[in-house]
Amino acid sequence: MSAQLIDGKAVAETLITQVREGVDARLAAGKRAPALAVILIGDDPASGVYVRNKKRNCEKAGIRSLAWDLPASTTQDELLAIIDQLNADDSVDGILVQLPLPKHIEPQAVIERIDPKKDVDGFHPYNMGRLAIKMPLLRPCTPRGVMTLLESYGIDPKGKKAVIVGASNIVGRPQALEMLLARATVTVCHSATADLAAEVAAADIVVAAVGKPNFVKGEWIKPGAVVIDVGINRLENGSLCGDVEFDSARERAAFITPVPGGVGPMTIATLLQNTLDSANLHA
Ligand code: NDP
Image (cartoon, rainbow, N blue to C red; front, side):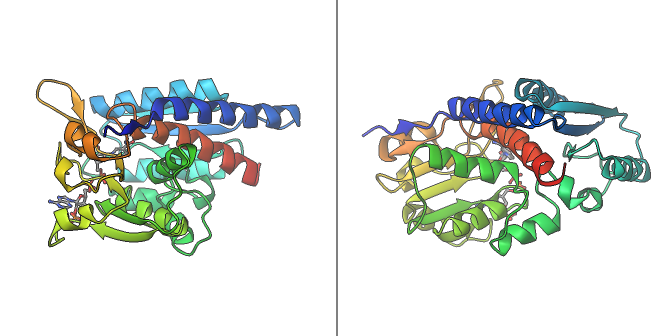
């Protein structure tokens, strides 16, 4: 058996078109286009690529993007002051601060300063808490994007055993909450998990978000399982690979996401979806 590939690029394109339609509907109703402020601090090359990508996709969706490109020397107080200004600005619907931040800035202080109504990354404790109590508002982009991918391939997590490998605040934990919301039975694995192979082998749906190339072995995958690979790892030869050993996992799985072209494009498309949602909720 060879798994069906889940085409994240295609699903993301569809989602961006839907967001564009939502934006057009706002304009037709006499409302303004949604606006997203993107704050980039310093000159980390990977972050620069992500931010440019976000801006380009905003244009595609008809969302106005406001670029705040700040020097690495920006102090935490200066950044917090900019966030305060954007929080108070009624023409801004979403605020995104590109992570990671320079070492002298405390990320949690920044995340918690963003008005939860404009927290399009969904990282504020308010939005994480809403997701935890089955009342989601703005949901973290990558896990929400994974749920959209599953839905678009007719995969319903209800009653299935979902195993999340990774428990970070931005991917693993909110992914577990999303799966629980979708009525899966959820196991969350992390670096203290005793027998990872056995946990993964029991999964109908595996989501890998570890950040280690080819870490989840193909032989662990239950035949017929759905494999979602969130990992993005750059190898020494410059190519990208995921957290799952792709070729061997593909032989056993029913569905699998490639890297690149799987979850990655969904994260950005979901950011646009969240920005539209935020605008529709408040403006
Ligand atoms: P983090 O480093 O924040 O978290 C990694 C998680 O993996 C932690 O929970 C850690 O456990 C767990 N882990 C580490 N080693 C092991 C192990 N030996 N066994 C089991 N679990 C282990 O990473 P992120 O969540 O931020 O990112 C994960 C990956 O996803 C990265 O490759 C990143 O680039 C990618 N990513 C992709 C996105 C996309 O759009 N596709 C978006 C965001 C991230 P513990 O909690 O115990 O430390």
